[in-house]
Amino acid sequence: MKKINILDIYHNKINFNKDIIISGWVRSCRNSKLGISFLQIYDGSCFHSIQVIIKKNIIKNYKKKILKLNVGCSIIVHGILIKSIGKKQLFEILSNKIYIIGLVNNPNKYPISPKKHTLKYLRIYSHLRPRTNIIGVVTRIRNILFKKIHSFLFKLGYYWIPTPIITCLNAEGGGDMFNVFFNKYHKKNNKKLYKKNDFFGKKTYLTVSGQLTLESYACSLSKVYSFGPVFRAENSNTRRHLAEFWMLEVEKSFSNLYDIIILSEKFIKFLIKVVLKKCCYELDFLKSNIDLDIYNRLNKILLKKFIIISYDEAVKILLNKKIIINNNKSKFINITSDQEKYLVNNYFKFPIFIINSPKEIKSFYMRINKDKKTVASVDLLVPGTGEILGGSEREERLNKLDKSISFFNLKIEDYYWYRDLRKYGTVPHSGFGIGFERLISYITGIKNVKDIIPFPRTVNNINF
Ligand code: 4AD
Ligand code: MG
Image 1 (cartoon, protein in one colour):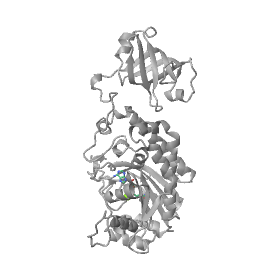
Image 2: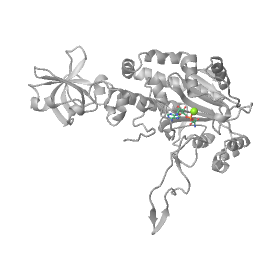
Image 3: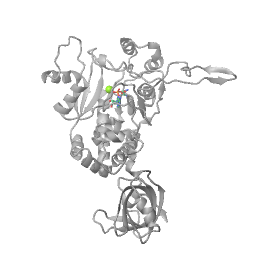
Image 4: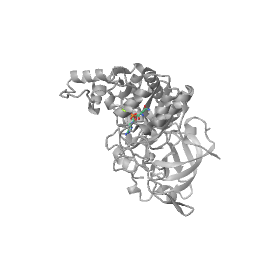
């Protein structure tokens, strides 16, 4: 007997009337008065579940065993694949043996009952929510995007660099970081070697970005990227912020702002095409449950070039539309996230790259422009989600980098190795970072990144 996945059936790999075994969980069950039970079983291999028919006269102990089954039980089904007489499905499994593996204690209290739950409710049960269709959909989309991100960059000759997670530097030059503590004393030859907080001999943190170490590789291997978790102790309880999220960072030497704008737009459009092509069941589900307009919305993104505007132009639009009232005598205006929302949701209604922001609101490593006021930066804002990408040309000129380090009151000695990259064969280079959860949120239309990452870490929330 062949043990198969439900996906094999939907891929037409299984012949009718041959013995097969599937294992999975009950999504729904119905028992008819005539002694026939209809179970929907899923095993995670694909979006679909499959109907299993259990007849009283075929299965031993039907009453004792089968009538005890509930949503959430795990079972192994032996049977044959048959053409379905019912209209709802093309095929089903006629079972000849059922092994019950795990029953559900107290079915009335099972948190993932078949009724529709809100995403907010499901977050309380982050350990059980993978059983729902919506989290299955997100997981499959996330999975294919992960794979295609690697293959897209691999084909273009980029090397994947696993940049470190523990660091002694704030790669963005500001913002709160999580400390890394070593809590135990460690004894060697009866000597206490490390004291609390003293494992590395320095204060250490969880990294906010792999960019600086990635630049070290770009300055020799030319085209590189990192893709992993980063950590920010941001006290913002919004639907766009996580304390732990995944970032894809791409770094390219001998390149400027426009090179990375072109690359990132091509990349994002490629990923949207992947989802449109490979995830039709997932998209159908999202269309009925999350965003009625999803196909239209995604296809429209592919039709036109993303808009590019300078920060200055963005400010002008906001002033014109009286979204910003300028009573501010300072040198620059800081566009708030609400004003960004206006630009992208109401004004352009399309993805926009905002380039050349004032140096004061950007990071120390960004290349200063000729006007000495702005840097060669880029942010990609998209409707609904806001910023999904940030990047820049990097300051490759040592004297200018040093000025910037002191402008931001950073300690020059902390950056000795980063400065070395400028001392020894420096090159113009640029890069960008995409927040993976925000990208998925944009594509799927699921508004809160807490529903995209498996176990969200946010302010006052670290269960699981
Ligand atoms: O704009 P950010 O801060 O840029 C960097 O970290 C650069 N070092 C990237 C680079 O040039 N290599 O972050 C990049 C992206 C943002 O555009 C956003 O999509 C996402 O990371 N992001 C977050 N996502 C979820 N939760 C948060 N708290 C996030 N902060 C940033
Ligand atoms: Mg940013």
